[in-house]
Length: 143
Image 1 (tube, rainbow, N blue to C red):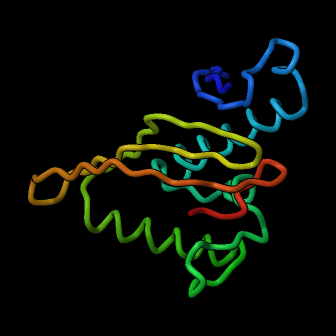
Image 2 (image 1 turned 60 degrees about the vertical axis):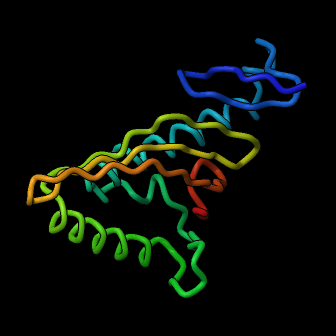
Image 3 (image 1 turned 135 degrees about the vertical axis):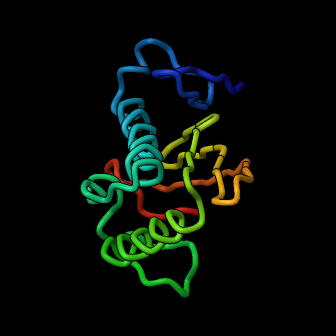
């Protein structure tokens, strides 16, 4: 049976649920750390356009889901710098809001809403989802 437990307001799926003793295990700690890392990605990189601490979020050996893109944190940082510039040009304001997150093993799935205002005054709103694979609390790939 699967149960949904809540750790810090974020759902975690676990086979058989989490007992209070299991919630203190290294697996639960790793899951909580992975969820926190993805939350930081949205808060710092996506919403604040801040790449200062990206090395605390993205693994040095990050592999993009698109095989045509270069791997590694430096390539990731360069793509994010371009994305930040593109978003600043396309929108007067924007925000990414995590609607729900679930984690199992080293995978975190996030369902989120992107809302933006265009220079002409029109609004854009999209509901999206992403899956992240993590190792040692750092994102190694995004799907």
